[in-house]
Length: 304
Image (tube, rainbow, N blue to C red; front, side):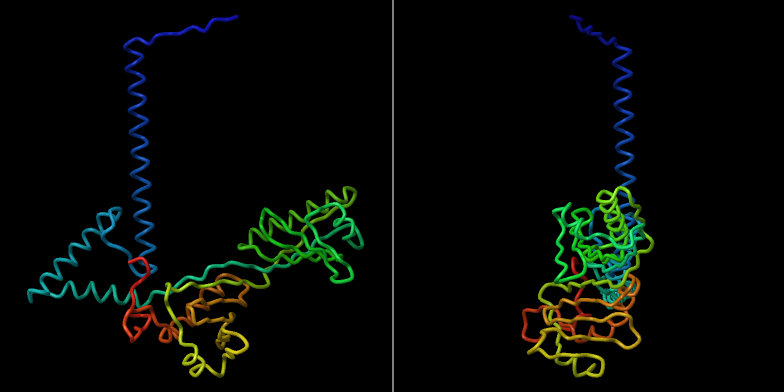
């Protein structure tokens, strides 16, 4: 049995090891500072887009601190009757709050793909017999239902090779799901070839969550937009708003939840909602403790 040899380090070796550890610590500290600066810069950009954040945060950059000092000095001068710099900063903050618009979050994408194959018709019953995560009943529906775990979605495969994908949250997930279905077909039919030809988004469903306790006056909103909206609270609790010359349809609920659907790209959802939000903002009321509710644009950005 071979014995292990233990080598003792002399003073020069110890100095070299300590120097190496110091250099590693310095490099780690430099990386942390660099990441901290990038995080502060990214937070500054997000605050400008959303409408301003908390200027008293410890991670704010030096430029933001200088701006805050100028605003404070202007406010003191304004209170003392000497200047109006603080008022200008307050006006800018109010304008940022007025321009603030919640961002829709995508939670479902419906896409269709076409799978090319050497078979004249895909044997769906064979897939149902091989894989337990499928459901197929020819008498009830012509397609087989395939539930994938990664990416998490549900696929409907027809014998012609048409594939409908629902439940994914991104277009890349739809493409990956199409190739996963092709892989399953190749495992069940090793002598045939399968290939994904196209993958197209048919519908995107997104939702917007307003601050908790926010309410929307659907009665007044329906009175103002009765020509392009539908509201029957005894049948459906939400108001269906179809803005003219807009690719999306909004489902608006009293609780402050808004569902956006009908777009074929996220740009349609984002810009379509942004254009109509300025119109319906006056019918949104924020939570208050008093009897009279305040309009939505008078309330600060959530998180302030």
